[in-house]
Image 1 (cartoon, helix red, strand yellow):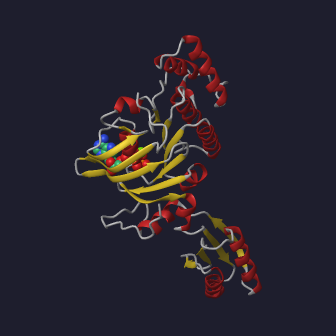
Image 2: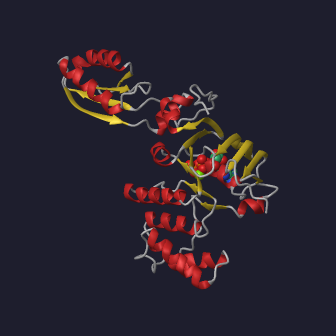
Image 3: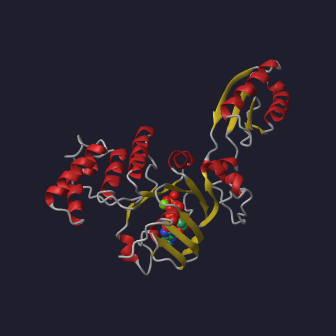
Length: 338
Ligand SMILES: Nc1ncnc2c1ncn2[C@@H]1O[C@H](COP(=O)(O)OP(=O)(O)OP(=O)(O)O)[C@@H](O)[C@H]1O
Ligand SMILES: [Mg+2]
């Protein structure tokens, strides 16, 4: 087998998939370096699953090219399949089997001897904190346990490339953290991970590089730092005691933080988008803002510090929010340098 040892894990050029009138994937160019987590960030219907399915050889592209470790996903599909594993948004373990039974069965299907399959199953269940649940049918697992067994199943044979399609959507914060730890452990073993997500904070936690996609197109690509810098460092939300002082507060925040200040419907509330171009952290900028407000005699009843959300990223990049995608062209305003 001609196995490429250096070069990117994934390379696509002009990848296209259409379903009737819908251009689900509309000319995607991606380069995913080996040995890292690459985040594909986008809202519902952006084309994430469709892209992953083409890369995993489950869907045939209608245009463009994609290579996985140098193998063409159409012409060398078998070679691609031997190197990748997919944990789907709708995953593939058997609900009626127990955790142990599922992993042993899959191990056997992958060609392991019974003793090896059993041993590997036990190791993975232990590593994923599922030892106690090992004998329970998967249909009785919680959402978080289910996601963990799905990932365990997909790394039975340490793949070179693992696709994780929205691995934490719908999970509570604790389960999300457990899945994140697993992803980090998988990467530490040398697997490249392509992760799709709707959450900026998830991409932020795990990914080295991020591609933001919308309506089947990559609208921004870069490191986390580059991406965030294009959006701002987050925002500080302030509620004042006295609505009469809001204009003063607005002026002060604008001058002090060189920030865009937005007045909320609530007559005592305003939000300042923090400046990403300074070396001051968001917390430092917020602290300075509060000090100056207090010095100016503007009483602040409460405040909060917000990370930029996916919605803000979208707004900054496309001029529209993630939900209200109208028919208008989505020219990238602030494309991140690759
Ligand atoms: N088999 C299919 N037949 C018809 N249309 C499809 C099919 N699969 C996907 N689509 C359409 O293609 C577009 C992209 O879908 P895709 O599932 O790739 O999005 P996604 O980014 O994974 O979204 P989500 O976050 O909701 O999982 C959507 O408009 C979807 O309705
Ligand atoms: Mg999807």
